[in-house]
Image (cartoon, rainbow, N blue to C red; front, side, top):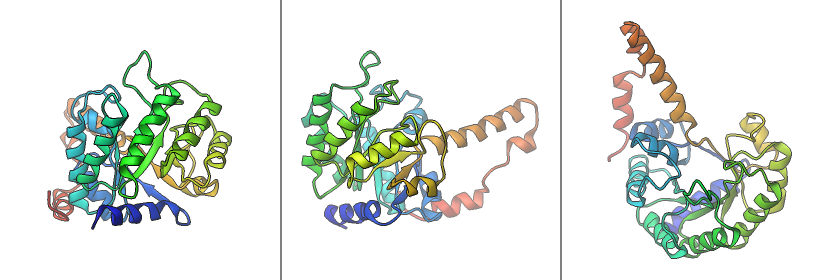
Length: 274
């Protein structure tokens, strides 16, 4: 399938009635489990990828090439559209972001997310003009070939400024972003305001607004077109591992060694080729 066909197929999932739920995988087995469960598209999670490598997310500790190889693997083994959660797009300049987008297309990705983060804990959010320039470069490079998501992390970085969030997301849409989002807006009213302001550009929601976890149906009812879960599934899996480790420290081998059957894992892994 050509990159333009991949783009059209993935974008159509966002614009149809109800949109899509796009869970985030972190390795080949989790990706195959999601594919076998009927999900039509999946995403990487920069947090889960960094954690799997023993590193921190959002600090440029994972390289572009590492993330590209990871995302490309998920695309190849599942055959599904894969959206790359590529932090700030990697690199200091808009031209660097464009190079990342072109590399993602070469890896066969269907989508890519570009955040307004900086990786600098003292200045975690880039200035407005810089953030817009980076999304503009991404959309110019990927136009018609990869779905570009423009994202502001205002709320994640302790900046609950709805007006600035809408200003940024509107600007991202105006320079060509196919999808926009801000993780964890304060409440449902803020989410509604964002959706209204950027319409008809599809809006992604990371699980829910900050004040309540809603159902898929409730999020769709207010106009959300894509729902992702970030590192939540990875955290759930690690929670189960922690419980098993706790059992092991108590000498409880039976509890510590339960989980997915090896036959089931082999069946899932046999679905595709690395």
